[in-house]
Image (cartoon, helix red, strand yellow):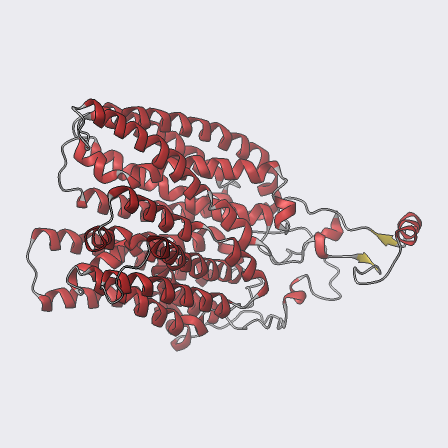
Length: 565
């Protein structure tokens, strides 16, 4: 694969990735059009809940996109997402608009899976590409991109209420046509680029600007949401507010524009890099202490000696050659190098990270999925502010965890997973607050939970790339993400749903439950799960600390060549 050279293309790609990440948040629109699925198509609550499962499954099952990212260029991966989005939401629009009558329920279930699976293709393509384009700032990049996905729900809500007149059929038509158009327009700009061989002082400033732009957008969306609820805005004012939102979404592109208008003078010209094979150190370099570039071929694919996999060599000849020292057999990769998926999945650290992530996001998504019912149970009739508060806090957690972990991993060599430990320890207190139902604590607990929930995403992503490498990061990252739907199924669908229905049945057979008892047992179980997650996270942090001491010795990312072992 030919890499795009120069210092501007990675920043152009990051600016375009912001729009694709907003598109990748299309699964968050389900609460906006699900009431129409129920009313227009005559579904009951159980059927609607099963469609919600399809929404979660499609969004989070990204193994195929992970594999594709290693074999295909980003534009092909994005194209698959475009097709899935067009076909899936197109079928849903035909049903809700009643253009086609009496579509079978199973067709709609599959269509919703396909539609939301576009999120996995979009998100994987831009995340993997940008993590490879900015290998020295993994935590920051992951925080920014995952932060914009967290904001996408508010963006779609803004469009739905201010432009589309709260029409579900218009929203589905927008998802069918608008998202593919946006992704097709950004497709050419998201390309694999030559990673920087060193850290430029301006990079930090550019990331700060991008983070500030995303925070400004988040505050703006929260403010306009409150204004829309508090006042009756005219159509012209609504359109102006949406136009300002679009301008704020375009702000990250100011970085490459600034680099074009005010080019920096490089202090020392770097030799051109034509392919990823040249990213292993320069030829003829004898300085063994020189910092190695980040993207080096893993030992699992580097053969020391003259033996190549394609040669027809018998086992006996191979053993003799090894015994004579003519050939050195390839060794398994060490933590911090590039792992294949099957090599990573047998490692204890892989499953420790998966379990910590599963317990953190599984407990958090349980509250998110039931936040409206939680509010109603304790007497909050309008839960819009609760949902907006959770979304805003979720964004802050994602963005902040990426930046903070990046700072401390460089300055103090503190493994990123320590922040997952801290977040889940705080979540224990939060769930106990929910269970106690103390007056005045609901909003504070929801805001804190949103932050801690976002931290899990922003820490898992760079940690997985640092432990197991970037070469097969797409499939490893998407397998880790399965913790989200599995957690939602176990903790939300089974535990919370069963407890809620049981408590509702005690209240004279009512289908809705009121009072703190509706979710108390659920919250206590979730507190216990986060306690277990905290313990596992401490164990993981202790285990991987030597890896971070090796990777970040000297305050910057470095990776020992396999030949040095």
